[in-house]
Image (tube, rainbow, N blue to C red):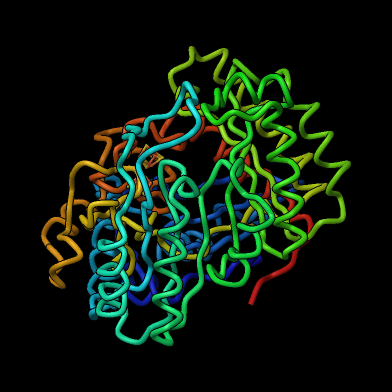
Length: 439
Ligand code: SF4
Ligand code: SF4
């Protein structure tokens, strides 16, 4: 037997070795297996151990003992899901010391200058954060962070529609001698040389995420800007260049659906050519939420397309390297399941998730207290009934109970789960061929 990945010591510390009894055993739901030459490879998503066993020796009593003691086999009546839940509960307890909130997603406005047909955010004209609110936001961040470095994510709507408030907040933090840095989600249209300079010198902006929907004509049609710009694609393209020149990282998300996929190879070709040596740029393709509602044939087509385009992008531009293998039990997913981040809306309400602007409030900037009960309810793991109960990915998957997209999430779609498993098995075979054991 060859160990290709070591066990997660934290989970094994909770589980201990399983006693060998005189019972009928079956494989744990979370064990993925595949074959390579004369070997059978097993990857246990609960303990995160991976082993390869010679097929001829599979049934040996020594191997059977190992499989039982190390949770590859469990008694027929065993409740696999409950075991994962118990481990998660212990992990939550181990991580229960108080944490300071030091990450703030600030909505400078809920208004936007684009009209993307797929946008789920409720655009609210005239909803800019006021200067008085911004002054209080500065104090609030200082009170909550209690000396920890502050991270800000500028959000909206389109955050640059109200950029003076970014000036007010960052100047305030600077005057108080507080350590801060920021990131931004923007459509990128309004950056000009003055704003790029401010972004660098005052906002301490490290990264901008910009969404693109296609080349010139397609982009113009999908974004449907109300800002009067003759060629918005060219403007955004130049702005991306300016940001990169100022050494601000740019992450481009290509939103893809049936309406624009034909245009994507041209767009990707153009970017690969323009930015092939650019280390600060990363591009990845992502399906629109509506893809999860396509009929099966179209869905498979779209996922194949995304795989192909992402593999080309990872070859030519920036990160998007898949993590090789998960190494520990997933016990949180996004900022909404942690305790270090909040959102601040233009009116000073403090929330949990940047995709929810009209509910699930933890408090407001005028009171230091946070409603812990709302946060706990929101962050609980959400179950998709029997789908989760028998899903091999369960230990690696955590969905937040309050998530507005919990029923649409890409990974919860059964086609997507099958594809994920297929990909993991491919990687297991590669790992076995390489035959290297990890520390
Ligand atoms: S939309 Fe869902 S996944 Fe995203 S931050 Fe909110 S709760 Fe988390
Ligand atoms: S991938 Fe979907 S079905 Fe599987 S555990 Fe996660 S939420 Fe449940």
